[in-house]
Image (cartoon, rainbow, N blue to C red; front, side, top):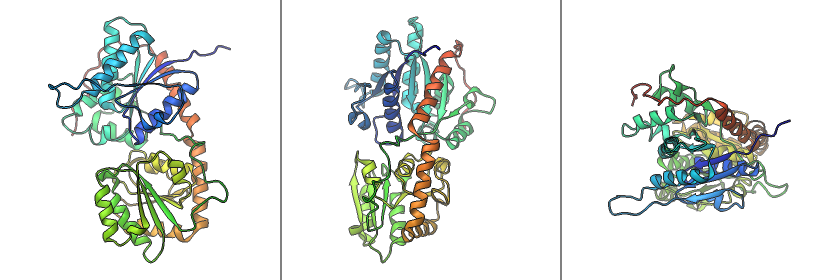
Length: 397
């Protein structure tokens, strides 16, 4: 029985607390645990990797601050770093998380390797996470380039069927090769994210928790209003984890609603499992959500989810089974579902248990990492198309 050789993999990502940065970091760590040589390129060390002893080699490429540049060109520095290390290491796979700028960096490095007749010429895998398509990619300033990057990659994946459909709608006709997007969902480390130990939770006072980057799309003020409606006359608490542009207005709103003593703003935290596990309900009120990684992490901790029914969230949360999904504009229904779970702890526990079971069955770390590993090997086994990819169709923006 033959043993497949370990791969040499470069992962390019944003060093963020958000979904793409977390998934890219967890994927890098998991692949390294399986014996692959994994190098991660970003403009600074991602928080998840900074807190891990895993054997991933991290290359923080800051770029040269030069008066000619209005901002430091991190993307160019990352491209150069990938090419430089490829010359000595010989990467099999360049895995770009986000089309811009990382697929561009990977494709430039691949082209340079081909021009230099390096062996091997790496294959480029691009994973679309959401805003690289739904916001940045659709902007007329970037749409033609985004379209090219998806088509020029050896293979492109999306984290949800919803995101894959939206990508097809905006960037390619059904007959073009870009439409052959493969859906590989996000995953969670179910050993790290797990239910609270017996006797340690939930908190005796009903508590809801929300985790995000406080961008307008996350609608934290809307969520606070819904919480206030759901918990009027109670001692229930809301814990908000994260930071971003809407934090100040959210703090002001909690004060004006008279609930600032029941709403905690914790800022950015690494100890997410410890913050999620004791909660009674997880809340997500986004106007757009390509996947909903924070909801998946809550489910892994045995916490039911109340969320708006947007994007790929319905592929994660089963309405009425692992939580509740409501219309994006229906704040009354959102508040009602939250109140129902607070008032019925038994139902909340049953939904939380169903959520944990769903994570183990469909979104566990080993299951999804194996899918990426299989994708890499299938891509390497496919003969390379040496023809330069051309434009698929005019972008619809």
